[in-house]
Length: 463
Image (cartoon, rainbow, N blue to C red; front, side, top):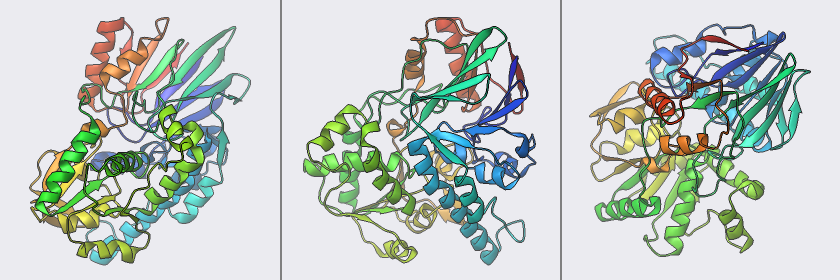
């Protein structure tokens, strides 16, 4: 007998954590930070449901902070074993976890200076030293290599697409004389998007923990390069700034890849493009080290001598002073900055400066979770609260969901169609309530499988 406890990403798209217990061993799959609405963010500060020192190992599906961002806190509270993930994920986390700590420290410092926090002094969830100690626990594993956790459990990392290094975890578990296969989809990527490989096909699954972010939506079939070109040309005519909140990992690189194509083919004018995110800069450089893990078209491009992201008038800002200098930038120009849901980072300063001007355009290029500033903008907010101030929204706000790296419900159903035998159970996580319910109904209708949507801290025994 083995069991699962759902410690996060239950009826929400954030805070992914799942505790697997088998024959006295405990393994945590993902260790994400909660983001979004206050009720969820407060869980980051709750006492962890089990003693971190009792956990025998952590496994990460991929590097996004909603899957990894709590890990330094776990280490600071007593976790002392190894955390396994793919080699690119290790490299990404060595960039992202210290950056997460730095952002929290800076935000706490700013809150204390301006006095807008309800708690004094405002504190970060963890600091830079905690993040460095957490990185010391990271252990790389190659795709498709069997990792033996103990006498009952082995795990294989299969490609999930989504972002660089993202994996599905295929766990083969010995139960008496039988073996059961438990699969964690992580965040399932899409077919045919630039840079990344398609998700691997799975044929045998007994138990599946499946994401449902886009469980009730379909992506636009329009060409993203055509959409982006149109938005840029409108911005050029207006003489404003196109401000793009974008995740530093994958989303920024995908946009740069498309901008390179548009620039090389003279479909957009030679306007300056600024990447104002030190983390995005570091991640962009990292892509060159993992060309062999990218899709065939990208490898072919590089083999032909081309650069993935290089084009005229592209600038990477590093220092705070360079970032602040962008406040004086006159349009037309493009600024891409993190975070993608405008929950923190340099993008907040740019939004505060650019939102009041109707010549400017804010382009949302990915999923915006409930309770985030990105969702508020998407839903037509007239004011946006930034650093304790109400900033008027006069800039145009546009949304292009086709840039999302999450599979939509058609793509998820197609991926499920390759499973040969009916799984004993499917658990839908990492989706808001309506999305998870919609996908659950579709899976029941299409395949007749047993599907449930766990609640926070639900415990299930798997026999």
